[in-house]
Image (cartoon, rainbow, N blue to C red):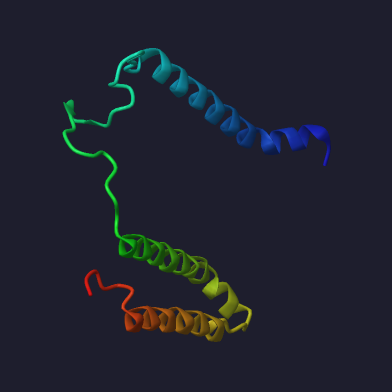
Length: 128
């Protein structure tokens, strides 16, 4: 493979990176030039909600249960995403007489056991 073939093979990738960089710089520059700026006023550091100034505290405290539920959602969501490639390659493995059903069932079993453990521990209950 010579240099010309490498250049043509990676040209779409390089164009995409260049385009992403240009769009990033343009959006940041436009935001800086056209955005609402309040130099020397209290508006700059205040919370902004629908043009109405807030009366109370802008920093509300969230319960730890909220974060635990969010982390569990992300954890199980990422684990389910691992199932998608298996669905695409399952037919190829069957064509080559390779069974991937046992590893898939083990993965799903660990996932279900983790979910039952979280339910048993009460991690998904909002109030106790």
